[in-house]
Structures are given as C-alpha cells and as structure tokens.
Image (cartoon, rainbow over all chains, first blue to last red; front, side, top):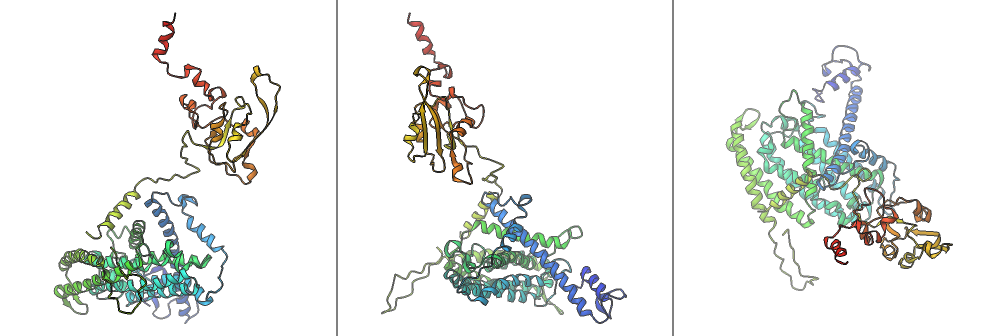
Length: 421
Length: 190
C-alpha cells in the first residue's frame, strides 16, 4: 500500500469505503461502507477518483497553458494576443474546445481506418501516463516506481510510433514526409536526452523520481549544467517545438503528420502537444530544478513550488519558440549526433570521474559526495559545460567533404553536402 | 563565438516582451485616420453642385450615376440642373479620387470612414438622400483650401458649403495671413 501513502485525501476516502480490514492504511477502527473483504473495490474506486481528479486538473492546466502560450507569443511579437473571450481572453481555450468538439469527424477516403484512428489516443495517453510517476509535492505522487526514470523514457518513446502511424496511415505525401522526418528526429534526440539523465542518476544512485528529488541537496541544474542543457534541447525536439518543429513545418509540409486530421482527433494532437510541454517541464523540474523543494516551505506549499517551476520552464519554452527560426532537417540531425551526443558522453564521463574521486563509500548508498565536494563539482561542471559547448559548436559548423565519386555512377548534380554554416 | 547569436536573439525577444504592443483592440481603440485619407463615404454639397456630371465622366469605373432635369432657375439665380439621382456604388469604387479631382466647383469630397461593411451589395450604393443627410466632414485630400483653414475632419466643426470651395481662400484674404507689402500698395496709388 505504497500508493499515496502520505496522502490524507486518499487515506480518508479509502477508510470511508473499506473501513479497517486488518492492517490497511492505518484507518481508525470502524466499519466501512463496503462489505468486508471488498478492499479491492475500495482501492479501485478511490484510485479512479483520484486519477480522474488529477487528469482533469492537469487538463485544466494544459488549457491554461495553451492560452498562456498564445498570449505570451503575442507579447513577444508586439501583439496583444487573444483577449476577446471571457475576461482578458481566459475562456479562449474553452471556445476552442467547443468549436473542435462540435466539428464533424471526417475520415478521408484511402486512409487505413485503424491506424488512422489510434494515434491521437496514443499521443494523449502517453502524456497522461507520464503523470503517474511525477512527484507533485512533498509526499504527493501517484506511484513511487523504483524505475521511474526508465518508465518515463520508455513511455515517451511510444510517441514515435504514434507519429509514424498517423503520418503513414493518412496516405498524404506531406504526412508521409513528416512521419519519416519524425522518426529520424525523435529517435536521434532520444539518445542524447537519455544519456544526459545518466549524470543525474550517477549523483543520486536511484531511478525513482521521488528519490531524485529528495537526493538534490543542490539543484542539479548547477551540478549538471551540461546535462540540463542537453535535456532541454532534446526535450524540445521530442515535443516538436520550435526550433525543431520539423514534423509540422507549416511552410514546407502543411501541418505534417496531422494534416489529414480534423475535429476532435486534431484536438487530441493539439492537446497532447501542448500538455506534453507541461509534463516535460515537470520532468525537467523534477530532475534538475529540485522538484517540489523550495525555500519558505511552511508558508509556500511544495505543490506551489512545483507549479511555479513548471510554468517557469514552460515560459522558457515559449520564449525560445518566439525567438528561434526552424532549422533544416540536416542541421537538426547534425546537431543531435555531432553536438549533443558527444557532449552527453563527456558529461557522463566527467560526472562519473568526479563521483569516483570525491565520493566516500557509505553503507547501502554507494558513493556519496559531501556538500563541499558537491560545490567543487559545481565549479568544475560549469567550466566543462562552457568549454564543451564552445568546442563542439565548432564541430557542428564543420563542412563535411563530398564523398569521392565512383566511376560509372551517373551524377544528377554535383554532390555537395553542406551542413550548418 | 558560436551560440552568441541565440543569446542575442533571446535578449531581443525579451526586450520586445516588455514593450507596449503595437496593435490596438480595434472596436474599442481606434487609430486616427490621416486628414487626407481617401475614405468610403463621400461628402457632397448640393449648394455647390451644378450637376455637370464631370465626376461621373471621369470615374474610371463608371459607378457614379447622375440623373437631372432642367431647373427653372435663371442664370442670375445660379445656373444649375435639378438633380433627380446621384448614386455612387462604393461596392465597386477603388477610391482613386478622380471624381474629386474632376469636380470644377469643389462640390464632391472624399470621406474619412472605412467601416462601410454591409450585408447586401445594394446597401453599398450611396444615393442622393444619403449624401444630403450626411454630416459634412470632407477629407482634405486634393483640397488644399481646407488645410489652409486649419480644418481637420476628425475634430472641430463640420465644414459648411461656403468654406469648402477654393474661393473661400482665394477670394477672401481674411483667411490668409495678411502680407505687409500687400497693405502698403493701395496707399501708394493715389
């Protein structure tokens, strides 16, 4: 019964339904509403209620985020942004939702019916599933999975499948191009993104997100500046956010893999795309910004700290979106393989070496670095981060030489492969 | 240094973020039109118009329709036709202003408005009754005499038919700042 152990709401609801049969959840000794031995039903009802509340709350935040993004983008571009519906335009996402809900669901001829209908559901399910392991506050989480980080990596990888299914099932050339690009980009960026977490895991010695938050004596953005940078860049590529929105480059491939989708199916893609920003911000905040930890905690609750960090990161994503133009697909790939991958390997190497040199062996916890040692690591890692970024940014802009032309192979045009000038 | 461009770009967008928006919330806030704006509603002075139909002849689209009959007025009373119809179909108008340039008696002026959206094409035709009823706030486009009188269509009094013509400035020196040598000349004659 590790499920929401410290959560008073869960415990009280559970006790109300199940009473105190045996040893469960430390209820006061009285009869529950349900008959004896129906604990499983009480568990299911309460878990369902909490999941419902959480998902709805999360969707509410996601709706607010879409409003926030449009509004802030407007301000970044010298516009006002949506301000017509409701007070200062706050009901704009509601109006959008009503509009999309009432649209006719059109399935074009020539699509693969099953593959066409499944991807929106997968996209949105992936986002919701990520919520399961995120610690939202002190002692507040759905599940303390001991392989939480692995779970998140595995779950978010399913995104690639959804994009590929949607693009290929649509039978549209733009969608197909987008799907091909999407697979290339998403798989490429997953590698440095996952490797950048390894530094965090070395420092904490646990894959559980709850342990990672509690293990952060210093926020890991200071200890792992390089890892933070790589993770944020990789995550923005994973979410198809500018400057890596190759999947739905409007000026090139209309709307990419969801060109043929309309109505509520499109709304699912849209919602998944925007709420992914929130969950990714939540993961970044948990891994690198200290999660729910914050000063002045008795007065400012830990949940609020978590929300503040999530929305601060979301603001950064919007800021980057408003600033950077889209990079070409070859630049995108070169950036992942030539810049982020070596840097993430350097990050792992440096962190591991530091922990080996500075850590003292303790019983049961492996190598633990003292606070003084951590600050020394902060200094070293910041220097390594700047040096590494400078050194490898030259590598991205290196021109690759043309391959030697084999005799007898007809050449349509001179083969000049030019990468990121 | 590589990567500095990204940081500079982020600084630029952040500066824009704290700047006042350039756009305005249109129905509540409006940007003032220039006094010389060639607007949609035309201003027409019946007192000045002789129904010569120069405007209709010069209109490249032929959208001004004028129907007249001989009036009973003698030349001393002011020689003019009586007007039966004066229709301007602004649905097809391109606001070139050639009709205003062509008017020999300064009777037709451009307006300052731009909100003449209608549900039917027929409603876009300005007829003579509407021209008579409309408030006389002519645009100063191609009418320097209006600017010489410091007239502004956006504020102040509407322009009367007497002040609208070029003779208001040309023949009545009161409107102009008096010159010193112009006053000295009549004294020298006798």
